[in-house]
Image (cartoon, rainbow, N blue to C red; front, side, top):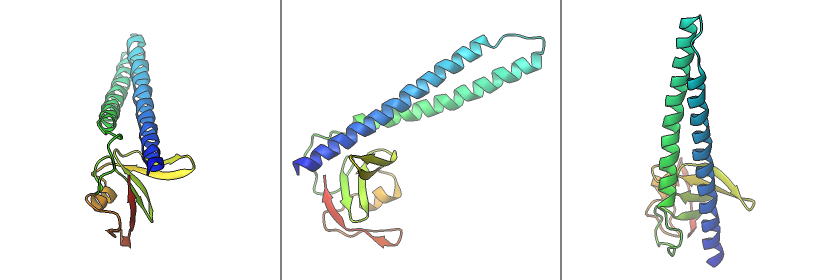
Length: 154
């Protein structure tokens, strides 16, 4: 089991890296928009100026919302302790290996390939996670009309 715990820790670290990159990229976008807003100078075409400022402000609001979501995602990931021994049932922080795929119950990052293995990082509120939560090795929950077989929980 030591190898699979290491895989889970590597997967978790990879998710953290993705989340940190998202936060960093969005911070850079926010800084660019702030600069753009500050450099938007008054011109003879006053309406054009106001329209430009309004567009930049809308972009700032959108980027700010995305930044808050990325920061929440990062905080959620940081709250998961990957050093704990595997639980007997699937819960937040579990890596559930099924015959249909490997699901890391953490945050919704989607498909992740790590060491040529495909994983799905899913939020605990995702439909697949709702079906898997609380299940044990050997259980066969049904998702989208297909029965899954839980092979292991890390």
